[in-house]
Image (cartoon, rainbow, N blue to C red; front, side, top):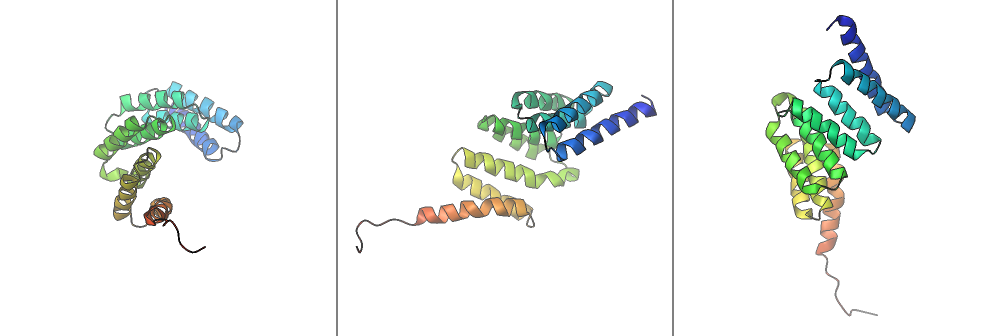
Length: 180
């Protein structure tokens, strides 16, 4: 593949990311989708392009298509933690929580030292899914485990605090009677 195709591919992904990050309106997201489709046409086996397609489709709230895109990425890089993270996120959006938890666990198993940036997100996603299915104690423990690994994480800390407050409130018992 020539340099011009490489440049065209990289430019398409860069512009798509910019539109996704500034997703002020759906027109920008559809344009980002067109750009990613163009990039995938140039390099159909590029995992990053398929991950970006998943992200764009998720932002467009087309979770079924987002899942199909991330499955394409998984076929190309089954040992890459990031693809399993995004699969979990989409499955969570689809309320397929057991599958989301399995994908998160797979993401943790596939983590490599150069993917340390993903640890915080994996813990957050796992705790969020556990909380969504009513497994609050496990969600709390997951946030705390995440903070043990990522002590500077504002994301994990800000998600943990409301659960801790709710847990503390649940421990108070309302007594019948009392002063009137």
